Length: 139
Image 1 (cartoon, one colour):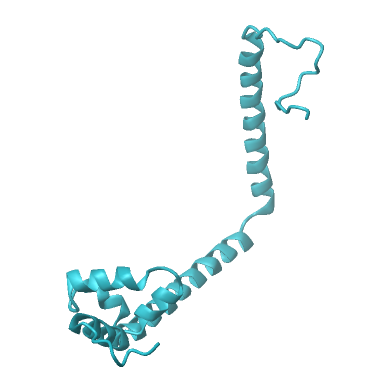
Image 2: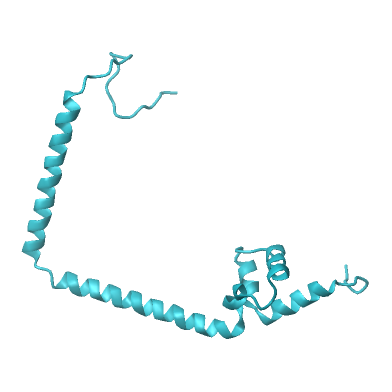
């Protein structure tokens, strides 16, 4: 099958040129984020100069890489701050705080168990069956 006998619509030719000028669009289609049909429809409706295409322009690829490296630097700084904070923690004070949290959780569980114990029990249809918190059926 060859395209020699077929006449391609001028808007499709313009779209092909637009894609060649903005190779980021090819990556979007190959990654499965968009289809050619979706891109063509948006291009046809919005035009080439719309801000939607800024992320795919060749000149913005360099600035996008710079933004990505800045984000990685920020996350690296964040991790180093956390590691520094953990290193400077007083182990005894940390264990004391964990113990206090554990006692608070135990107290909450005790209160909840008192409320659960005071509620009337529901009549069970299988009195001979062992009580289980899971309702599995045997096949």
